[in-house]
Image (cartoon, rainbow, N blue to C red; front, side):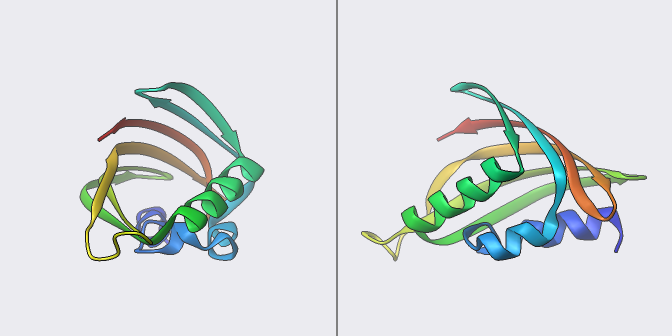
Length: 120
């Protein structure tokens, strides 16, 4: 699978809510460096799985509205807005935030992520 296809598949609707599906995309040595409006965070494999579980407990749907993707060799840039639906209000999409990530792919898995976000 090409790097761009891999990244686009990872951001399919609801995938982030299923930790077993998330595991299929992650390199065992994954590191995400995340700069957000709340500060800097470094995430490893277990952190990403824990985030998936937390999102699954909080939301019933997850949708990424992708606006840009650029790929070069084993690196992919993606820009998207993340929308969710809550148990309390399943009819309304709620904007979680706007994101952009540069992914480095290794062994056909997400290996290094450099992410910035602004929460709504």
